[in-house]
Amino acid sequence: MMINNNLIIGCGISGSVIARLLADAGENVLIIDKKDHIAGNIYDYKDENGIYIHKYGSHIFHTNNEKVWNFVKNFTSLNTYMHKVIAVIDGIETTIPFNINTIYDVFPESLAQRLEVKLLKNFQYNTKVPILEFQKQDDEDLKFLANYVYEKVFLHYTTKQWGKNPQEIDSSVTARVPVYLSKDNRYFQDKYQGIPLNGYTKMVENILNHPNIHVQLNTPYNKTFRGYKRIFCTCSIDEFFDYKYGELPYRSVHFKFETHEREFYQSNAVVNYPCNYDFTRIHEYKYYLNDKSKKTVIAKEYSEPFVNSKNERYYPIVNDNTMAIYSKYKSEIPENIYFLGRLGDYKYYDMDKAIERAINLFDEEIKKQ
Image 1 (spheres, one colour):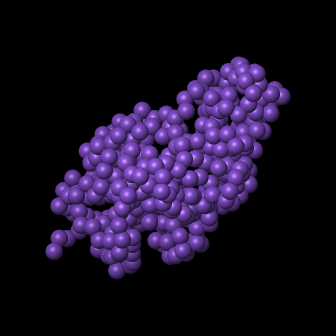
Image 2: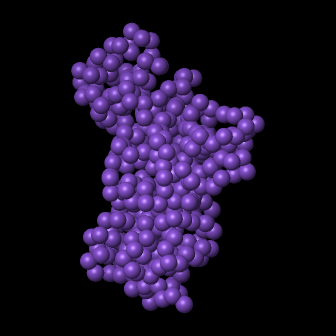
């Protein structure tokens, strides 16, 4: 039986990347996951209609990091999909983030022209201004615009997603909801964007396909896993330490899947509903890989508090109190144990940043040992 020098907890993107880097360096790896599948929350599958379904919400790969892009390309081919998000504002479908095109969609042309002139006089073109910063205006027209965007785009959506008033939410979160001084309707402006042509699960399967890597699913971590040279944890850091300093809070989401007997349900892959309904948005998956089917599958996304053993951890709730708890756990980490990923680092990561974190951990700490 192979002797595994390294234990990795979690078969998501962070755990899989560090596993591959170790394996390529000649190290043996056991990677475990309590789920019954690899790929963590980027897990997808082709359903009976021939549509790739993202089980845990839409995932779009995007990055400006060429090193990360080249790593991913070793394990999958990607299409040239560039993500756009539509929101229904005052009954009008328009682009999110709120940009110059959005202004012309929702306002009369004379008002839109006046607002555009003042925006370009006060802000640099092609820049993003966080919504709470954008509210600090003296001009009456721009005050009106700031209040409109805050009310129609930000306030109700954020309250639904986080269950809190926006003023209570950390600035790192609110900064992700900007006003974009541009006519670029893409949700991301990264140089590299796309969806794996054979799905994310196949990409992760390819990453883990190495003779030095042994995968064990349906296997939660427990303290019987001893004697490893190193342990890499992508699980929640508070869970690893038996919640000795209390639970770190998260927001979770659940998805109501529906199959419809029509080619398309909506005009775009993702449509947000900031001010209407209890769900935040609707995903329609066949747009991502241009899947051909007479039916379509959608998922309505509902935000909810994370409850242990009931649902999944999605978004860390970052504030001074939670970071103080996280710091206590971090101070307990032994020298041969490494935490990474959204749950291990208690930090929001896009996919490319999770990959970059794993590569940097390997290059800066593990490779030198």
